[in-house]
Amino acid sequence: MGIVYQETGDSARAAHELEETIKLEPDGVNAHFRLGQVYRSMGKKDESKAEFAKASLLNKKTDDSLHKRIEDANARPDRKTEAAPQTTPDKP
Image 1: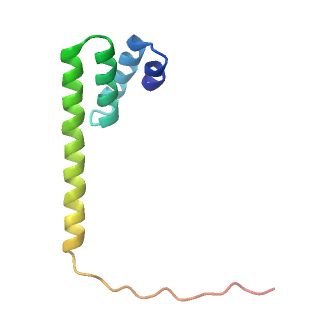
Image 2: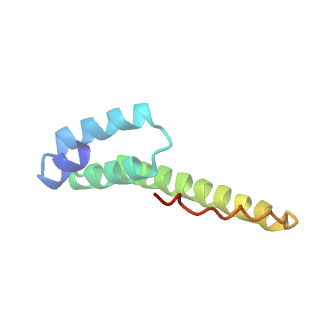
């Protein structure tokens, strides 16, 4: 709902909804980014910068985590899997 309120220009309601979203999902990059935009539109420069910084940090953590998983996957030896047996549908 925060995005809807943001897009309709209701910054106060957008901020409230996004703040509530962040309480439920503190690591939500998009919510922090959107809240930063809303705060900026409200003239709350310090709060806006803080939300953008949180979004950036969370995004970096997500990227780092993804890169680590990719490295781990690439470091594993290839495992050969047996081909699944071919089946044909029963004919009536």
